[in-house]
Amino acid sequence: MKNPRVLALSLALCLASASAIVTRMASGQAGLAQNRGAALITPERLREYLTYISSDDLEGRNTFSEGLGLAAAYIADRIKEAGVKPGGDHGTYFQRVSVLGVKSTNRSTLTVEVNGRTRTFRNGEGASFPKNVGGKQTVTLNQVEFVGYGLHLDAGHNDYKGLDVKGKAVVWLGTGPRAIGNAQRFIGERASLATDEMGALATIGPATDRAFGAANEPAAGGGRGGARDAQPDFTTVQNLDLPQKPEVIASDELLEFLFSAADMKYADLKAKADAREESLPRFVLKGVKLTFNIDADYQVVNTRYTRNIVGIVEGTDPQLKNTYVAFGAHYDHLGYMQGVLPAGQTDRIFNGADDDGSGTATIIALARAFALGPKPKRSLLFVWHAGEERGLYGSRYFADYPEVPIDRIVTQLNIDMIGRNKDNLESESNAVYAVGSDRISTELHNILVGANESLSRPLRINYDMNDSTDPERIYYRSDHFSYAAKGIPIIFFFTGLHPDYHRVSDSIEKIDFEKMSHIAQLVYTIGWNVANLDHPPARDFLGPRMGKGSTGRLSIR
Image 1 (cartoon, rainbow, N blue to C red):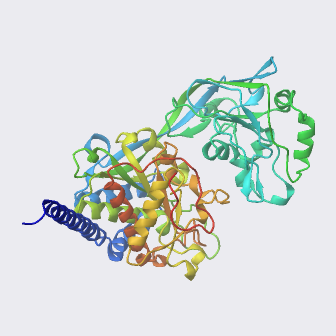
Image 2 (image 1 turned 30 degrees about the vertical axis):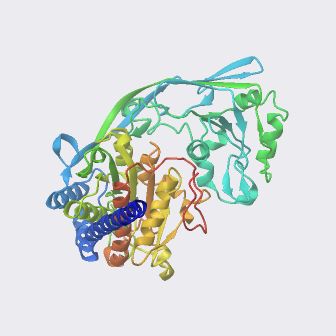
Image 3 (image 1 turned 180 degrees about the horizontal axis):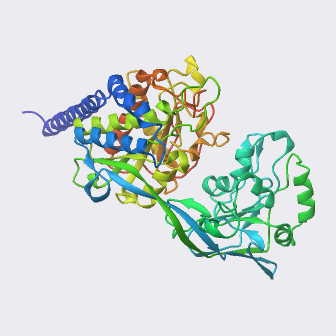
């Protein structure tokens, strides 16, 4: 008779072995299901979609045009054929996007207290606020940091190096050192750098910022009387009642008072900034308290409409199907040139085959693959955004007026231009740029890396454009940013700019459909993996760490 302990041990080993076999079988079945779905995305299918999307019949798909309407109808027809459920208004595939022209009556003020002395600066009287300051609010901050020029250009010039400005107000001066040359995009977006990347709660810049399109842009139309009074001060699709982080352009009078108790006086700092010295000193403005009283009334003076297309593939898990992995692309482009064409030119239509016909066609193929193939646990949300070229109209509207609860979107995967090689370089033939994968969720970044490694032929993922010093600031320029601004983990897929970008020569014969399908299968795999996680990708908001020369996974803290 065998020892009972031996029998128990044998039984335990058998059970463990059986469990491992079941786990491997389940994993293998999941892998087979994933592969069956990805196999539905083919170069031929993508070519079929893009042939129509980028055709002259659609007249360049300009926002508010008949051509964009034809594109919307085509997309809706294709996903309906595949069995994708409508996700738009009133049981349709369409979400109407209201584009508002708004007049602003802005009574906002900034009260500055320095060591017990107080002065209040009204909008237009020493302090200039943007025309759109968002909803009424009062923001009081007693942590104020002077950050020199307020620029982060590269390792050689980073005014935020070693500083933590989260939850603080930041102040800067000047336009940067002479050595930086042309850095207009960085100068004009210092407020975005401070609030969106560095976590500041308010910004104050000098009057020179007006030259770079910062706060207090003039009203469209200008002048007095007649029809001009009905001209909007700004155009928006966003909810005007939502709060925004205060942004002020300050007069010399305001800045002189702000620095009145500092060790270094404003006149001396301004002289250094005007001389464009290599660096400015950085320091805390002690004894300073700022109170931003945001108070504006808005009147809508005109409205135009366009449409997002929205589809849903329902997940299989009774609980997880109430959460979503979102896929997006913009389907608009630049329309066509009017008037007399330049000598020798005959083509006037911006077909936008790569920008963003490639993304548009790919999202159709992804929706079809998930609808006809195996279903993951979570639901899949597909949105074709309108008006990206006008200022992220469709995605900003969807983020403020979502067709599903915004807090149930666990990830957004955005595709904008994946049909070509950067600068037409052959060396870029297997490359795709991933932007933003690490900024909100380290876990999502590692899912991207793992998904790529699982492909039979992994892509070369380049993170150069995710670098915080990227001069094009790509992270802020496509629809994913509307979701990221709501705290949703995103990845933006892009293959780089080329000589045909925003030209009539961006046409279908230059598209690499094999490369498109390869990237589409990577996006499918990431979406599949996230949709089958038993938890949403963890949000740690650690910012951009993957940059120039980066590869591989990141450690999760």
